[in-house]
Length: 185
Image (cartoon, rainbow, N blue to C red; front, side, top):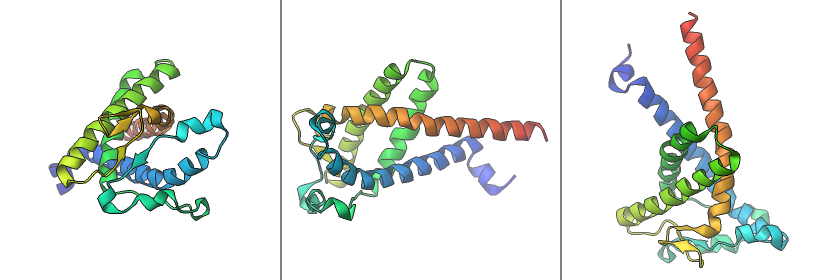
């Protein structure tokens, strides 16, 4: 038994590893998201409506120019705080929901994931503003809820929740394979 095994049980180490993977992937996704939103807003109206939420950062940070840079630059931005936000939402929110509802119809699962993300996004937005004194993000559209989430972005969270199932399924499958390999030794 190593010192790490004594200090952190295997279950906690695995959760921290998944937290790091989720946080890293989703911060990268946020950086890409700025360009995807700008492209989405130029699509025909029947699709573009999904991209017309008003997502912003605290004016005191001077970061609003990200929306005006040319799309061809593929420029995006993210606060390092988002690593913790996304890690928490994925590990504590989506994984927990996935384990309970994975056999439900896709429409119901997507709805649950959407609500989980909206609720956690809003709660963690408040935690961050109370912690840092800055609005790392906020929504200023007519569908904003308590400033740190918006029903206008709900369709995106619905889709992202369903897409995240693929990663969680892979994680579960790898854990089963590892357990099988251990028991066959």
